[in-house]
Image 1 (tube, rainbow, N blue to C red):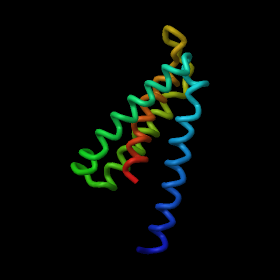
Image 2: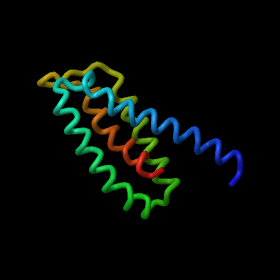
Image 3: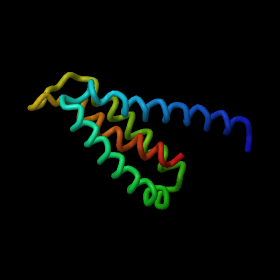
Image 4: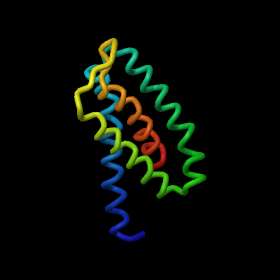
Amino acid sequence: VSTQSTGIQIFLWFFVAMSYYEFNFGWGSIVPNRYLGYLMAAVGELIAYAAAVPLIAFMGRRRAMMFMFAGSAIFYLIAIPEVKFGGGWTLESICCLIGVIFFSGCFSGF
């Protein structure tokens, strides 16, 4: 194992862990109902953990991690505009719920 790949792994682990916990501690301010937000996040994590193993087996670990990183970055960018839906839900809250699926998959892939 080279020093360069170890440094990359440390950086990626820190980034994924920081983003994962950012999602988990921010549900009270992202969605209108805190309890519904945590419930939706838990469902998203279950989907991610169930999908991560077959995805890694199909694509390989590196490609699957790149796919999940790219998916989470895309949903971060989609969440930038201020778009409101009914019931107090916004585009940001929906993209964060989908983004937590990608980051939970990354978290479980490491």
